[in-house]
Image 1 (tube, helix red, strand yellow):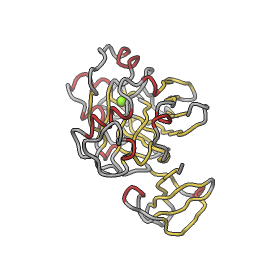
Image 2 (cartoon, protein in one colour):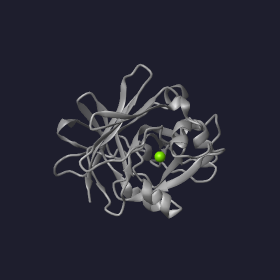
Image 3 (tube, protein in one colour):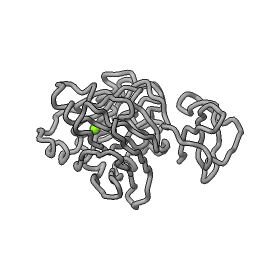
Length: 262
Ligand code: MG
């Protein structure tokens, strides 16, 4: 297993790197764009972590956990409900996210995000996971009032900053790993969401098969797999952490952002 991050060091362009303890092995570009190690090993504690991926598109699955569909008053979908977030919505760990003044209710949605490793179309249940680079954590930030009034979700899901990703890409891609995760969210230290990926209506493989039948997926593209129940509004100065744990309760990802009134 590797952890792939994108680092910003003072006076340097952003660089992809494999994190190994306190050290980072730099790459010349993203591994999923055929990047290779440059040979440079640095201590990464002084670097800033950026979003670990630069997707050409972000495809999201809505209502993929039954309890969350119910809490919003919806029937369970018979096939994955898909929408987009624009790449311009991506921010990294610890970035401030502006709560747009035009919305009266902006919610957190903690989600497991898949990162595509190679160009993919028409994946099958058998070959889909082999096309992943790995996974990361995402917050599918949503202006809930605009989602209801607009009729489609481009604005509600698409403001700048509405797609925090990170802090790194974990390269494990086996079905047992994806099916054994807890997807959690805490706001100002209080737990708001805790769901199990085993409770997804459409599992990671089914999502990949469905989405790749529609879109050609490019390396670095990101798929948000849906949020468990417990979505709630974020207030000015809220500290929101999306945390994902494995079945031994080890933290796999912790992605924190602060929300500030616009
Ligand atoms: Mg969502």
